Image (cartoon, rainbow, N blue to C red; front, side, top):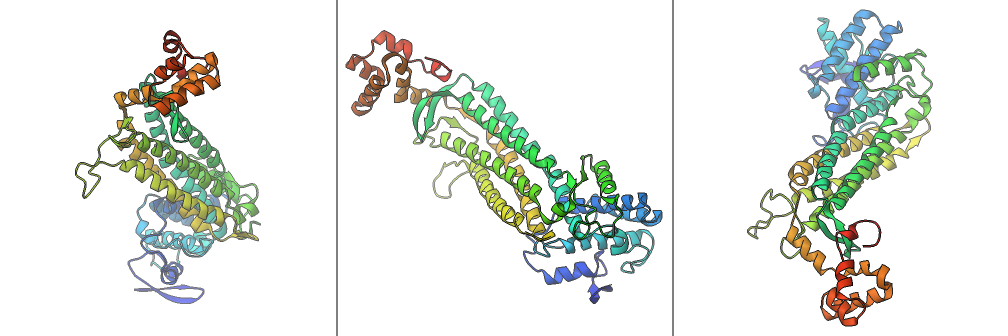
Length: 464
């Protein structure tokens, strides 16, 4: 063990660890959700980026000597690279400003910089966690910046590519099945014909729209709170710091980060994060619709709808031999439910900005990142293990189309709604075909019926 010190006094810290007194106090004071609710690699990387770019900005502004800035930048790069992930042990349920996590980053980077300089870990010489690593910063502006950086990078790295990949699969399926005429359904009841390609094109369009919402929400993450320090006034930071550190972060990440124009809003409200979470929820809603449609269409296989087939991935029952279930659909819909719950928490937490600070920052970040990660994984799995293997059951589709009473809709322009309804109801009540009912009622000739009832023509605008 070694002795570290903070404003409260001495703290015993394992000699193997790079974290210091304040991190150790948080480990001991917040044993809440340990092993389940720790911030992951995206957040640790974002802290490393902020600290590295802050050191560079402070150097450029004459606030930090070159030797200390270089040590901080080198240590921060190791954090960015994931070398010290094990040195970030803190859970989500801590102070609402994320102060302990910010100090965790300050202490790890300071102690690693001390090691690089050949000094004694914990000595705070030649690099101090507060005076040097946290220079021109406050937890209150660092953590919001970390929230934006981590979230934006995970959207770009995982969720948007997974969405685009599934969309591409569906677009290809829509082309492949463009000529397969099937029964449309509204209210879970038979409706007029549609093509399987048209059905799938609707799913692809939903993903397009959801991805557009995500990209629009993503833009709100580009302004960063850095430079606002404690309450948004920028106390203890040089006036150009916000712009300079945003420039450095843009250079380091390739993302066009800028300094938030109003730091008071950037610290006390997190509407940009709330909007991202809502956009992720919208995507989850689209995924729910697609997955549910697929499992309905694939239901059966003999006593259900059974109009499409999906891959047989694993046995589905511990008691019924040969049973196979739509498990990828189920997994995706469960993820959607989790995303809806996460978004509800984010939305409520976003309303809890009191005066100059919102103190629900960690839970906003955690839930948003969890939703992004879960949905990205689920979309990728659904794409690879279900959507790519989706195929039509052509015979079943043809049987359902031929049995449909709603083909009678094509007669409306020729004999009117009332007479068409008489034919449909007679066929339904007597258990006959539409053709037989129409001929029996004398409302249509056989020649006209065969010419006007064309399921393929009914999938296009105009009179069949």
